[in-house]
Length: 576
Image (cartoon, rainbow, N blue to C red; front, side, top):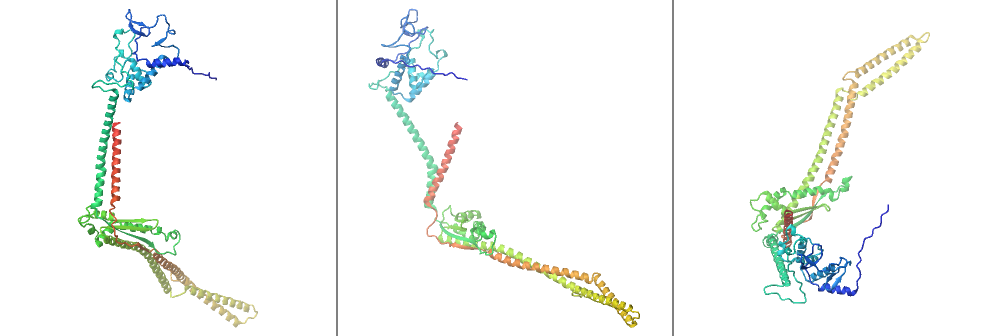
């Protein structure tokens, strides 16, 4: 698919000679502003002379055509067909003349609005003035603003069919005044330049008056909401506030050396993380009401701050509640814990330097007692549990040993197993002798003529051995049967001996546990070390007069700025 090339058409202005251009420029400059001439029914321009038929006579020859008839402007003839016609040159010249009049911006905007009301194709404010003057309308006359709304039939130009007698009369146009010539105004009438200067001065005075009024209101608001409160705060800090003396001190909560510590606890031992919880607990205790009440009972905290020579803001009334006293306590006792160094810093303020140092020493002693109480409670609990376990193991061992003794006394036999073993050995011995006698008897009976005495003696020995073995077997049977048999007694004694051995092991473990718990308790001892002792101050630390006054000014300024911004935003939202 191909697209045909398209070229724009340009109208190239025909060149003229320099003489013709100079003559045209002089003619356009010297030409006065002429109101537009009414046109006839055929659209031809007339010279304003009424004809015999009631119309307007044409100023050009009747036989001249539109292309051959020239347009004459006081001796200068411009042919049609040129790009820069006489009307364009005259319009440009008029705009230059209007620019030289020195019109104000307000007048130009007024001319543009009037031109828009009359549907004039104005390209600029000066062009609007030029078109209005060609129409015979003064854009700077106040009466014209009331004549902007016209009937529908008269909104545009007068139609060609209207008689020339009913046409509106041309108005008097303002004349251009040359700047080089001095014009003398009529008595009681100001020139346009003076009137314009007077209006400018009036506007400037109005602007200055409004600016002064706004500045006065702004100054009043700043004085009421910023400077006056700041002055009151500065007066209080410089003349009313009672000087307070601060006593600084630092102390650490340390842990005993633990050479046997192992694991993660051993890694943290010796650092500030090992005692961070205790330090935080001490800080919370010193900032509590308990410490405040104890300080009041022992050092007279409320009595000191209830004296008459202390200013009303920092003074505590004699019948004040504990909550009010606690507010004064928190304001004058500041405690901070540094986790990176493990140091607890305390600052105590009072109206007298010696009293501040005394309060600080009392609070440090309270912290020492609190630390000792915390570690003592922990150590006593651990050691107490270990000792209770040891006592239980000892009692169980005693019971096991008593049971063994009772079993041994029950059968009157210290070693039932030994008795049974002895019987078994005797039976075995006699059985061996019986077998030997039987062999001898069999050997004697094998002879043809055995010795009767030997045979009878051997037979008698065999009978005696059998009877003895039967007796021993009965004793074994009696010792192995029944509740009081040697076998049951032997089993009970063995169980009692095993229980006694177990209790011995438990007793030994309990003893080791007690010793280890005591060593661990000794390693867990906490103690408080005072790094910086409280010393009475020579100069008061508060109030900081200049710093507090500047801070009050900044605070009041910020509050006023926030309120002003909020009010302006709300006003803008409501107005929109």
